Amino acid sequence: MTSGFFTAHLSRPRPARWRSLLAAVVAVALVLPSTVQAANQSVQGAKKAVEDGGYDTDAPTAILIEASSGAVLFEKNADELRAPSSMMKLMTVEVAFDALTRGDIKLTDEYRVSENSWRKGGAPAGASTMFAAINSRVPVADLLRGAIIQSGNDSCMVLAEAMEGNEAAFAERMTKRARALGMPKSTFANSSGLPDPGNRMTVRELGVLARHIIRTYPDFYKIFGEREFTWNKIRQQNRNPLLATLEGADGFKTGFTKEGGYGMVGSAVQNDTRLIVVVNGLEDSDDRAAAAKKLLEWGFKNFEVRTLFAADQTVGYAKVFGGENRSVALASKEPVKVMVQKNGTDKLIARVVYKGPVHAPVKPGQPIGAVKVWRGAQVAVETPLYAVDAIGNGTTVQRAMDGASELMIGLFRAGVEKL
Image (cartoon, rainbow, N blue to C red; front, side):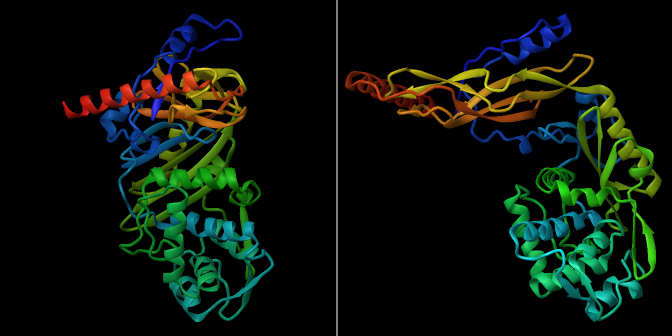
């Protein structure tokens, strides 16, 4: 990886406070390790969270994410693996959403309620259930509502058995799907989140999953905001306490087991900004609701969206090898926006990152790299960049000079590595 120089150009005057913040944005790094990733910029522990964000929570593990960019606004022990309890059902329904989107199953497909799913996840189990009757057939659309709104263990088991034959095979599918979604730590032993040592997730990966569901399945996501669902003549309320207590709340999922404690994934929209919160390990349901609500309220109160670069505005340049020009301008197809604290104390560093040099010829619109914006130790936003102009092949002399230059740079780097 390499990184290039760039300058922030503003289309209109900014207040002095914002000008000082942008001064930090223009900071440039000459070398950026290829191992730097947003998921690895973890700020662990309450003390560090207070120092960086001026906020703390009673939740043992927590994270607050801005949904559009994926920027982490707050985290505490975010990479600690814990029992996810019923929050794990988000992975079960995501697998179903994916199958529906690909056409492998349909909402009208009816799946049989086996004795196993009825006895272990239904009324006889005495836990959360949609009360599906044994040997009845339930449409996929209703099984999803039973899993999401009522947190039905039977709903998840029926889906798992129908889609993969048994829960163990479905759990393997969940793990494989999690890896594809960029969740390297999560493991699953069943479909419901019922106690099992094999069920482990971090609040960070639950946040990644929640953001993916919102962005990928907007129509299915609406189910999470439905206040109640009736099945088998039994009406049950949505278990998410935020729906009735926080403006703009429209999802997600609560969870509880004795091992994992009380946790929840929540999301809300205010002033066109969506935040996602995940907390886990609390001692009672009231603490869980309070911790999630307070963290969301803190985020909405203390952060705002700022545009650093407009769509198609030149962000920086990438070095070109063997081209008629030595560099190519880079821009983003979407505005580069970042969540910043309203008090203006954020320190931002932005870097243009690409694998280089870029070999000629270069086509307009060709993907080149990305601009990464750091807030302290965390990647606040990462946006793809494309080539603005066409760069044709250079002359034989130009290509020879570029080759000699790269050879000298390679020898210098090799020498440095030996020191």
